[in-house]
Amino acid sequence: MEQVYLDWAASSWPKPTGVAQAMVDFMGANGANPGRGGHRQAMTASRAIYECRVELAKLFHVDRPTDIALLSSATEALNLAIKGFLKPGDHVISTELEHNSVRRPLEWVRVNQQVEVTYVGASRNGTIDLQEVSKAFRPTTKLFACSHASNLLGSVVPIAKIAEMCSERGVKLLVDAAQTAGSFPIDVNAMGIDMLAFPGHKGLLGPQGTGGLYIHPEIELEPLLHGGTGSNSEEVGQPTVRPERYEAGTRNTPGLVGLKEGVRFVNTETVASIRAHESKLIRRMQEGLEAIPGICCLGPNRGEERASLLAFVRKGEDPAVTAHRLDREYGIAVRAGYHCSPLGHQTAGTTETGAVRSSVGYATTTEQVDTFLEAIRTMPAK
Ligand SMILES: Cc1ncc(COP(=O)(O)O)c(C=O)c1O
Image (cartoon, rainbow, N blue to C red; front, side, top):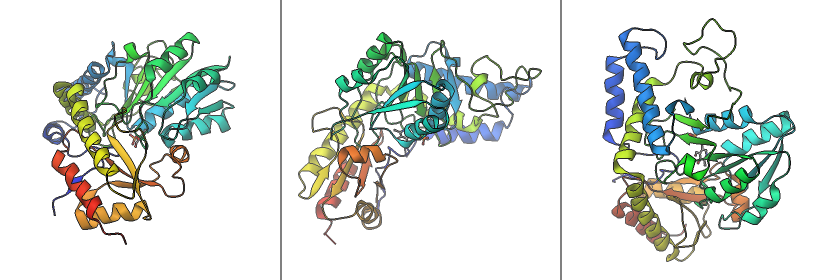
């Protein structure tokens, strides 16, 4: 049975061939610690990491690559941004579409740092009401933290409009680009994004254990971790210089070498062509699913903008059972459950059931989408 991988929103696979090859080549030739030592291997390792930063800066239109902290995941980036920025007495606005990687750090600062949090509601199909957003600002609002696209509903948040509202009020904007980096155009300057958190292992096509945070040059964060940076060793405090301030501890050099190749692939293929491909496939998937009796699709209506994912429920069947049957009987990998997004399920009215989520990537083919649709169409009820 040929395997069909439709779980790109969780982690991308297959990666472009250059990714694994670059990691293997690097590990065979170099085991040095980047930024720790002046010998040639250490310098090569540092350069490799810098090149990864440069590729990312090109992708997100960041002026200074050193404004990107290279971290282990989007989750680490979101924790650094939220815990490092907010202070007691601050107010932060977020939305009911958020992944737990935004919501849990927000709840942590609410409970432990006396930060006030407002979650702006969304319509059943994931649209944020901008009037509600404008009403949520207070004199103490310091940050707006939201995902670019919901990982459950696939709806896309109007970041540029929210950025405008934030900038009029001197509020900083943190965007979780976990479901869009690599498949939607992101220009931090043009879109007014002050901090951008991204995973390396989804649309950027790098390995797991990589991610990062762009931090506007005028924003100072309290580091999440304190420790060795290979620089300013005589000082007791964490260096103020970037990116070391936010990168205590040895970096995941092989992972970042792989990420550099992934991002280079995206930059070469272009985000526009990846977006066009994924958008065509996800439209086909939605049209196909909506034509099957008993299938209820979540998120934006057909024809509306949607990230490269689609969650659905099969009437009368637990989504976990649907996903299990797709895997065991048809060789199709999708994800079932709550997708770390309990607020999103409240919005969609699927708190009781959860949902099945299928998602596509740059290497997904039309035939794979059709195989998936045929499986759903012909799968007998149990
Ligand atoms: C919207 C969203 N935010 C954050 C994350 C967390 O990303 P990571 O696995 O890199 O920590 C995910 C991953 O599923 C996500 O979908």
